[in-house]
Amino acid sequence: MQIEFEFGDVETPTRKPGAPVKHKTHASNAVVVTPSLQSGRKATPLERRFDKLWSQLEAKQTRQETFETEVERARSWIQTELSAKRQEYKEVLVKQTEKLIAHLGKKSLARWQRDVLASWIEENFERLERFSIAELPDLVRRYYTAKLNGLSKAERAAIEEYYDESIEDILTNVNKECGDEDDDFTDEEMPDEEEGNNSSDRSSYYQQPDGNSEEESFAEKMRAAEAKKKRQTFDKSIVNKLFRRTAKALHPDHEQNDALRDEKQALMKTLLHARKTGNVAQIFKMYREHVDSASIEIDLPDLKPMVDLLVQQIAELDELFYEKTQESAIHQWVGNKLVGKSDKSQLDSFAELKKDLEQDIKRTKLIHPHLASLAKLKPLLEERYDMDIFSL
Image (cartoon, rainbow, N blue to C red; front, top):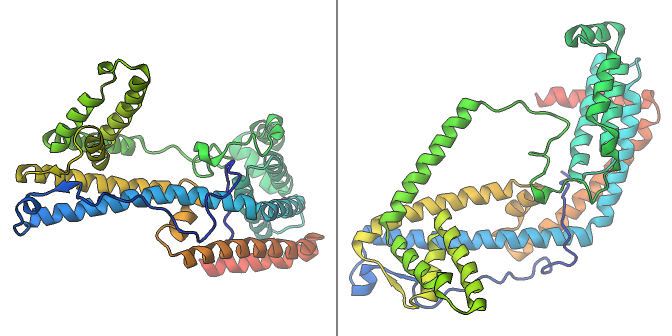
């Protein structure tokens, strides 16, 4: 299956596929010391739970950092290794779509043949949309024109009665929605996935109904309640004490040197963001770097709220990681194929991606001769129709 990736302006790979990732190393002494470690006695269940959660938190933060690195590596590799093949695939896919649209307007097509052909064209639109090509608005306009012009008199009459508009007026509206100004977009000017405009959330040609306002309101209330609970837990924990001590040490108003004041301003911004997001490890790290370099000793009364905070943050990191993997096709592919995998497995994934693209180009080219006439196309439409029925 072909995955169409959008890539940014990364000119060279961050590292070659299969090269080892440099992970952040931790200090030899423990960041957090529980009462059992201080006294040498056997750890309580709560202390063991805390130690386990802390290890999970560090592992998930490392996973997040690795994921961002792998996305950039994959994007850079795609640009350097697959750029020419991706361009070739776009060109053959545009040619195929143009041929299919030309056949769609022919009135000799049966209703089921027209439906199968329309579905095929829309599948191509979904692929082309990920490439953000300049030809897409014009192809969509031509598609709707052919779709309406190819209708029988009875079908045209039914549509005109339903919409209370003539077919000509409907086509005029289509031309307005896919206006000529869109045709001036180049690949560089089209919305980029990294700006949050991927195929799942950009304003596309396939409009989605508005969400249920009651459900959204309920979700907002749940999020607000969770944020309030998290804040209350934070205020009761030792993390809040460490945050305040660190904030006091880094407060830029206490610094006379302009350069150091700017540096502390940036550090305070990082610290405040850590508190806002509940980043426990970041607050601990900044406390050790800027207030006290010794390990942080936690008393038993502080353990329970700390455990609650760690549980919350681990859940948030898992949710954030999932959201990141859904941002685009490349994020999803990296999450599934690269993160946590061995070097050999990663190399195999890159090779498989290249092979899939080559096969898609080959399949698309093989179909092209069958698009020369409607008589040659109809057997393919029948095959697709049978496959759709079989998949139900």
